[in-house]
Length: 402
Image (cartoon, rainbow, N blue to C red; front, top):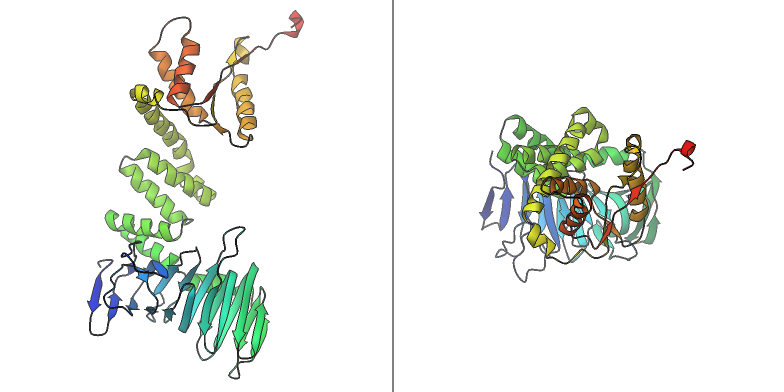
């Protein structure tokens, strides 16, 4: 089945998507005031465009409507410019009005409002029935069947219901039902409700299932595209990070593979350990750094001529001036120094392992008594360090009075 297959039905002014996974890149035509952007859809959807001349892919304009079919996997995630977003379930129709204003015609959706820290963002207005919900912060489920119904989730919520009988502030755990007389009945939502409806409405799980099926069928081109789309819509999806890391590794892009698998290990540490990713990361990190070092030395003349990174420092491994048995202590002492310096506001401590590999590579090409010091200076210059710390330590024998 082909993806991103669009058919324009001019008579009905309707945009149909028959793809099992529909994804719209952020492409906006000039001078079109988009109010929202489709991030990810699964199953079949219909988009009614008020302006039939508008073909801005994935951009929803005032007056546009999005409708999902009754297929359980027909779902969408739609994002607003300020970071708020909604997940739209199956058999649902949503009309997009002005900025941050939508109307739920039928079905159900989950709305997420997350204002920028320290700023009072514009409240999301969800019109439903004969009233409306102003959501400034929090997560709510909004349902429109015979009568409006609202379930309020999480602890940080700022939500107000506006109806014929006035305003009503809503609180976490509230299950709100609006009667035929527009009266508001508030009961308690079950604790399991949030997890259940999130799983039923979010497009994340069906999208991952399709991407995984494509991977198992060895359709790597489709799997790569789908997992990329999933990661853009759901940055903390572990399956996407794992598979994208695998694809980058197979393509020979070690550094990109490391970035993806580091993300995967952060999201799912246990999964990364069981799959062997944790062990592979150690080896890949070493190879990635070695590749960077080789490239940096090849470009030494150019890098050395660039201005240093402001407020940066390269901390060289401390050199043991005493008995050989105390050599391993140097790593610990250097780590202490780096830890303390990293706490200084505005000071950037450059990567220790990369610095050491640079020093080792430079040593191989140098001779003479000053090779130790000069290799450290060259390494610091290549890494564009503004400051360079070079030091040593001596642990004496107490029996010798030292």
